[in-house]
Amino acid sequence: MTLKPYISAILAFLLMGSMFTSCVEEEEYANNPQGNFEALWHIIDEHYCFFDYKKETIGLDWNEVHARYAPQFHDGMTTEQQFEVLANMLSELRDGHVNIYTSFDIAREWSWQEQYPSNVSDTLLRRYLGTDYRISAGMRYRVLDDNIGYIRYGSFSSDIGTGNLDEVLMHLAPCEALIIDIRDNGGGLVSTAEHLASCFTNEKIKVGYIRHKTGKGHNDFSKMEEQWLEPTSGVRWQKPVAVLTNRGVFSAANEFVKYMKCCPQAIIVGDHTGGGGGLPFSSELPNGWSIRFSACPMYDRDGNITEHGIDPDHFVSLTDEDFARGRDTIIEEARRLLKISGNTIH
Image 1: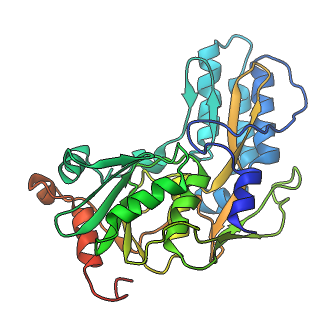
Image 2 (image 1 turned 120 degrees about the vertical axis):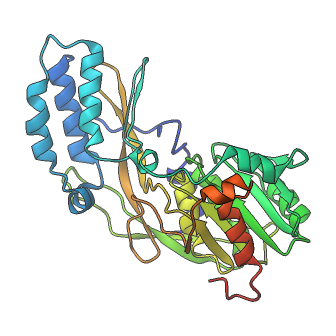
Image 3 (image 1 turned 180 degrees about the vertical axis):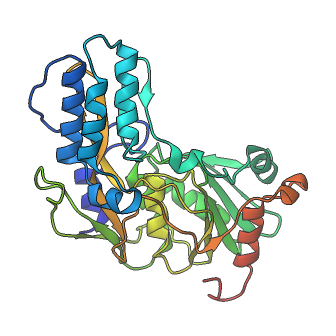
């Protein structure tokens, strides 16, 4: 399947910061602590998409989770206590797309970034951007002093127009190469990620696969459906490009890295991404709390699940020595790699 109808039909939502508007329908449970627990456990049991993968990678046994958490719920629990225990249960999945939304807090599992070095510094980014950078559709961009273009794109939460991309790429066209810095980009619109990536290929290319839940069983899925990236009708970049990553790259930004891995002139530089390779759906508990969970697994072009992130082509971390000198190690390594002549940067 191509990405364009795939985006319009399924992905008209924010992967981070909001919930998918379609909800799964559930049987009714009592609006009490035990009822809310059973409702949540069964919603996840019937619709979550990574049970086999989580069992393989972290040893998850969802039935064992039920047996361990069920005794913790009783009628005397406060609202806050109920929220805490439900949040603890969901954290067993270690999935950044699994959340409970209430009026007083959001249950989240952010170990995909919190347990690792940030590998990005606002202080250093301000030094490289300076004060005379341009801004367009969420992108901050300029030409660096070695004639390499630099785009800082911190979020895909807003849509991006072909006109915006054309103007940015035309301004940077005289540059020898391009850096796209998406470190700490927690996601947003997958359509934005697709639109940006479409500027870096001249032909239709396969970038991955997706499957959909077809039943309530843990292994009830559709066949693998191909994802294709089509070139933009606007300006396309024909020179080397480096995408900078860290553990804060998640969800739609993780998808962007997956797409760029398939583009011929692109390299990925930095740290392993945070992941978030499952499309989220939403539902509701008896007490009115909204929940979100991964429902459709996505894969790279080799059929590997991207839930736990994507390796860069070149692992690089910020060093204390470079920071003290006002240098961003990852940017500097990307500049070095981009200056290597021809296509040998891969």
